[in-house]
Image 1 (tube, rainbow, N blue to C red):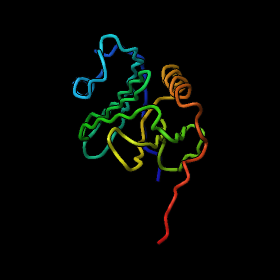
Image 2: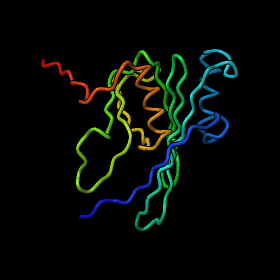
Image 3: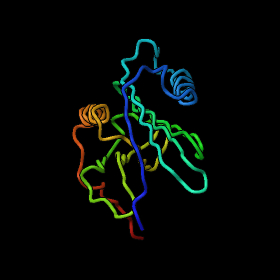
Image 4: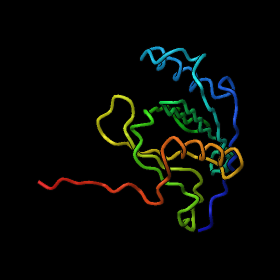
Length: 165
């Protein structure tokens, strides 16, 4: 089986250039939870566009929107043939990250981005998310900023803890 063909491009952009559904969900969350004035928040906004060909749908594009504030990390996933979803977590609640650029790649799939584990807002169980980020200049800038706020990237997934009863 041959590898799938993906193209990834990450760009830094103004908040207003992110996908509209993501922007609205983020605004609603910030207003609803009374997190402050969005206009005064320091935000670092990025968007990764992933293009690929798929039979029978043809060429598809997917978007990963990423916003870092001082205390929060917001992300949104949208695009062709996928349901739009958004998430957020307090920076302090993010537990582990895996940078896929440092992981061995399988023969049939190219993975670019990071996997993040932690608690989303108001959740009591750990969740995990694959966020696509290109290996270009803007993607590396985002990873640097995220690494700075998280402390550092781990090279291994977080250890699962199981209770035996």
